Every structure is written in C-alpha cells, then in structure tokens.
Image 1 (cartoon, rainbow, N blue to C red):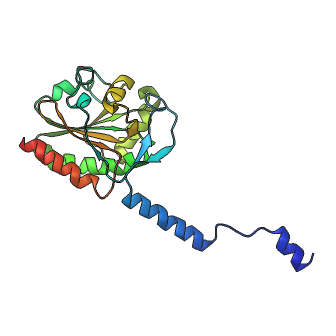
Image 2: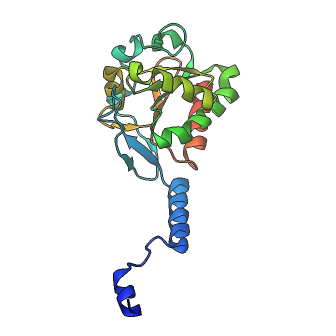
Image 3: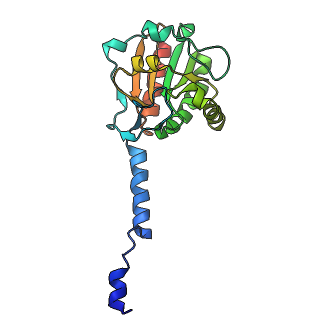
Length: 214
C-alpha cells in the first residue's frame, strides 16, 4: 500500500492529548463558576437517572408567595428516615432548619452535601438543624443512601421525600439540589435551586445567620 493510500484510509485521531487537556480545563472551569442542578421531574420517587441541566449563575432564587411558609401537607407529613422514627418537620418548630432535596445520582448534590455538613457542624450548637430528603424511591435506594451517608459523613438526619412533598416544595422548579432555610416559625426565608461552589456557601451562611438572629 502506498503512503497516499494509507493517508486516505486511516482517519486522524480527534482526541489528541492537547485536546483532551483543553476539554478537561473547560469542564473544570464550568464546574467552578457555573451553578448546576439536575432535572428531577422524571425521577421523583423513581430510580431512573435523568440528564443533568445547567441553570443561570445565581443559584439563590426568590421564594414565591405560595411557599412563603411550609404548607401543612409538607409540615405534617411523616417521612421515612434512614434511621430512627419518621421525619416530621412540625417536630422542628422553634428551630432554624435547612431542608435539602437531593439524590445520590445527582452530581451537584454531591458537591453541596459537604458544605451542608460543614454548616451543620458550625451552627448546630446555636440551634440549627439540617435535614436531607432524597427524592429517590426509598425501597430501591435504601442501601445506596446508607452507603452515601457513610461516605460523605452525613451526621444530620436523612430520609426520603414523598413525591407529593417534593412537588409541593419545588413549585414547578423541578431541579435538585434545592435547599430551604426555614425560620423558627416555619417561614421559608431563602431558597436555593442548584449549587454554585463559589456563591452558594457564603449566601447559605448569611441566610442561616439571619435566621438564627431573627
């Protein structure tokens, strides 16, 4: 075979070392600067992992009047816990609460949870409680969630959010993670949709400080 024939029969390698390095750099920058979330519409109470999506850069979203306070259907629901008695948000009346909707398959949730562990350790002596509610099917994900808790040192209460509770809290924003800073009297003071490594942690701390002083 001639050199000309070889050149036409062998396609060039697209993923060269230089291109791979550039791709890695771009993905790293996106992870550092962009707020990201996962679409959970098809996954509430299910096991299938939906495709991830990206949302605008400011992950702190205003709370609509419809969810300015915890609805009774959310506040009084008994939700399955990984350990212990069922989780009931009304039992936390008088406490400042960070409520987090998440899932084990969600990449941005994996980024956010270490920050939730940090803020819980920082503020628990001042009365802060953190509750993580997986949107996955509790029967299908029970062992996965337990292993996840151990891997990420989740020392706050963890359980599962029934579909009706998730839908009521999300109010049409079907993305996770979603975190809610809730006052002692049950008002939702701040809602975070998605997670931004740079902006979410300081904004979360400001909201917690304001709730603890309120």
